[in-house]
Length: 139
Image (cartoon, rainbow, N blue to C red; front, top):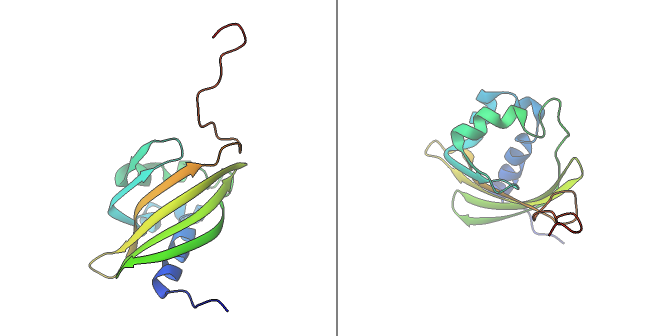
């Protein structure tokens, strides 16, 4: 029998899934409710995103209205301290597989917000993780 999930973990998973919803990604006010003002992300490309950069770009990134959907699975969570939750999960976006890690923290008003996120590509799934080899004879 599995132990019941801590309510903070369940809330973080629900809020993480909201960030995958095109309606939320296309609405700055809805998205802003989910991000901590000190938010940072290290994307699968290695790019560092700030709070302002992510809010400005979110609707244009994968998972938006015209882009491929974000398929998220294998959620697991740990309460690190009161009001601080670490989530891990996996995504497939347009055939690219990534392992993801998020840290959610409660603000002074009691709202759980995304503080940090990192995506790591899974090799061999359509995401280049190293420079391509030069053509034969051009090394």
